[in-house]
Length: 178
Image 1 (cartoon, rainbow, N blue to C red):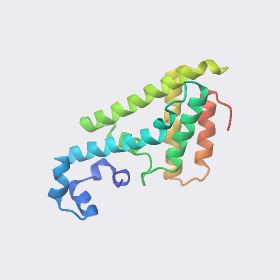
Image 2: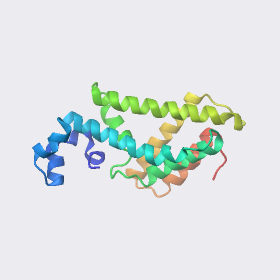
Image 3: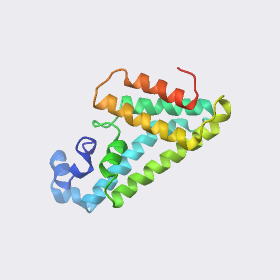
Image 4: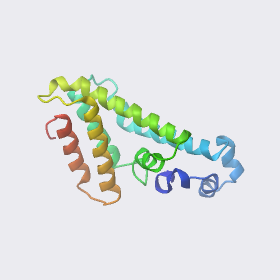
């Protein structure tokens, strides 16, 4: 998705039409407006994240094994990201965090839902660990690590970033190394 490279502000009806070899009106029809196109891009990116990271957990009972699998899937998503510019939500969060409006609200909702899931996943698993950190603190740590790992993979092109990130995330929640 080109928007992961150019940002949501760079995503326009004209650029999408040019990329698809279509007229602007042909692209505008399904979306109605540039803002609706941008919102659709955010929804699409969220769906890809869920399919890659969350859906594989279906049927896995809450606990340390599920949390470890979530971390592994998340790191896999960052390392083999389907978006050429890296994690789309991370990029959109940075781009929109200081800009009020519906797109920022949409990203905020997605990030809040992910934080809630991480908090719940850790809460369900922490009885299996010897140390118990506050679940919201763990969610903040994991999200911060993911943002750093995304940067190291995308910006620094560091081939060791994914393995180091996986180890850091596992340590942050109290899981043993792989």
